[in-house]
Image (cartoon, rainbow, N blue to C red; front, side, top):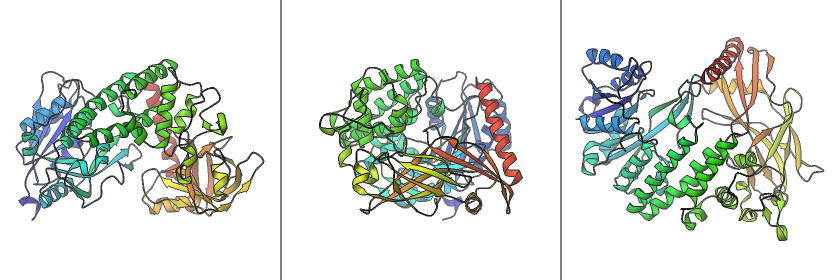
Length: 538
């Protein structure tokens, strides 16, 4: 069956004050070919040139239909609902005005939907960090290409994929169950819509094709809702959306409701906690909101969460205000989690959070080595090596017997890790282990080029520790001392190789590499652009 014979798709594009980007989004939908019978662009009463851009495009492309709202809805749900109401295709696909559909997305989704007679079909999505064009997969490993899920309750972890834009919906299915988005100013409307879809118990088919590119513009003057976390109102909105979604799912299936609450503890809570910042007023308001919400969770759901999420809940319950070492708590919320020293003990040597807040870290002594929130410090050791110190964790690593450490460079855009040679670890006087780990930045840059990373490469720097008992643990590095200095290194291959170590938002070591003069200039220019954007936002 070729594309012209496939059932048709209505692509619903929503736009508000996005004149500079909406044209690219609409064009990517029109470029899907004849499988897309219509593109319905809903202009949510924009005050810029969005209406003009859409009308001009519609005059050239008969498949583009423009719906102009006379009053701004305040959210994304109402314009999407308008698009559903105007759709005539057999299937509906959603697209935001600042994102794009990759070539062949609609075709791949429809073929999979038809093959498996699935009312809902899901494909791969990436978060594309602009302007660097680094693609970070969305929920990697959650969906298995070719899989068909007869009922969502068979795969409760599906509640973790709250996006609506990486899925194709049979319009008859939406109509039969009255599935719509929350109207008006409702942030995180995807949470509620996705919950309603899962509660309707559709068969879900999975395609391995890339079907959505989510553009992330962190330096934009007006960032997207999901990135705008400077106001505690964003967290309040997320909690309310999650509360609504969990209730919908629980009414349909206690299993799905429980999975939704566990997902909040392991994902949403940790994501916002690790970006808590240092504003005492924000921290206090965030802490109060979170404590009140988590107090509504059944104890069984908290016990079902991962150990580090349970410890965070215990700390929330133990104090009405954020602890003095709240930054240490943000590192526990990182991925992978890291519990920074000092390591305090309670009665009988029980691991506790701190002497000031002796909350028991229940279950830590029974965790597998690979799940331990180990901390590894790194400081410079010359121009081509780092000196690391692996901290013990209540004697658990000592029991396993650390033997070697191995640097790992993982592309932030996704892809295969580059491993350095393992180096033997030696006990130090502080009860930990140390080693000097060499690396070759020129070889790393070559590998990055082979993986398609051109002008600028970004790598997460981690370390794997192998133990005598056969166990191992992988974690990120905590930069110390003068490790974050930028260096321009001579290179026989590139002339110059600019290396810029930096600390991520979660406090871990990462590295930008810019091979060649063009790459170095690009990195410097990009840094200046981000600085200007940050000043403009202030």
